[in-house]
Image 1 (cartoon, rainbow, N blue to C red):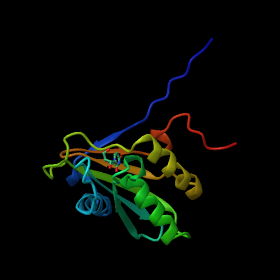
Image 2: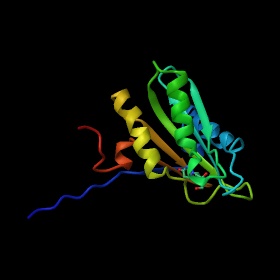
Image 3: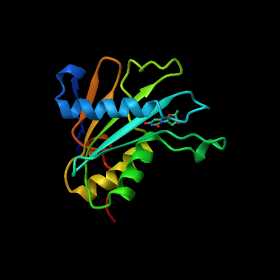
Image 4: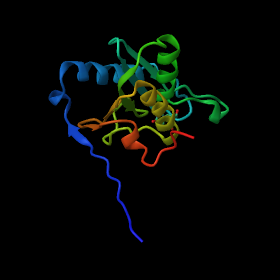
Length: 157
Ligand code: THU
């Protein structure tokens, strides 16, 4: 018998420790929360993706009276980005949220499992790591890639 452990390195920074491009991406995610349609959860999520041509594409969560028909911010942004810019590759994604009071939660927002799998597809397509910025009120958590957030992921058959 043997075992192996899987660890994910998460860098933690404040907004003023990020460079200008990183700040722009996080700010775009935060702005996108203002365009969320979340009448049921009152939890507004924004995601911003930097593409290889330096375009930033943002999306927000879109809820539905039939709950499962709603869509997370990350997938809204990813599917729009790749349908609008099919030649460009994903470079980085930032995610931010606001609660029903319009405040950013203390704890950084982390993508759900389904979004991780969906985003992994575009990381595989890019052939390079897509850095993930997860914004909280004080801290930004940074993961080096989508795959690092989805250990033992299904990526081939
Ligand atoms: N949500 C996202 O948009 N992204 C996440 O990473 C987690 C959850 C949305 C889905 C739903 O509209 C609301 O947040 C509450 O779950």
